Figure 1 (cartoon, rainbow, N blue to C red):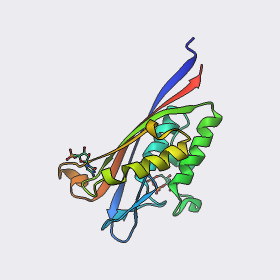
Figure 2 (cartoon, rainbow, N blue to C red):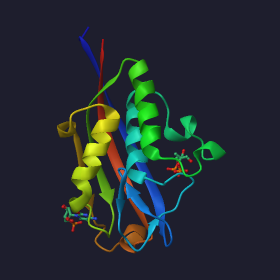
Figure 3 (spheres, rainbow, N blue to C red):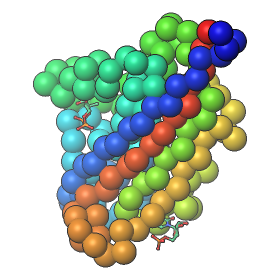
Length: 163
Ligand SMILES: Nc1ccn([C@@H]2O[C@H](COP(=O)(O)O)[C@@H](O)[C@H]2O)c(=O)n1
Ligand SMILES: C[C@@]1(CO)OP(=O)(O)OP(=O)(O)OC[C@H]1O
């Protein structure tokens, strides 16, 4: 048997862009005309990464652990939810090897904020920043992302546990 059990996890999230909400991605508050609508702080990047690490470790998904029907998570700080998820993942013996995510946003530009997001996420996952990669991509003006009606995020995580 291999000395390491390796698993890949995948995550996706989408939230609507609305006026009068802050735009928070990867724990970074970005100045923008609109913010993301949600029960929590609507940090779609952290939600997708949380789903990727929970998925890779076979522990379900964010909604199972932090239901949107629970008033406890109204306005919740998604960094706290990511840290709690990471503690659970670690309890089951898993460590994160790396995380890679793409923020699908017609606007704003993500690149100027990526380093701040990486620092927050690496801190919450307890890994070196070089194991976290965050990037932005427009939708070439197509569909709901292209019309700036929302922002979506896709993420993958590789996890390892002693076999
Ligand atoms: N919200 C975004 C979108 C894009 N970027 C950066 O621009 C590059 C080109 O994006 P296209 O969607 O036009 O191919 C992309 O590779 C990113 O570097 C961004 O930072 N934020
Ligand atoms: C973390 C939660 C808690 O309400 O956040 P929401 O803002 O509802 O966001 P969503 O990504 O739709 O679902 C995850 C929820 O469990």
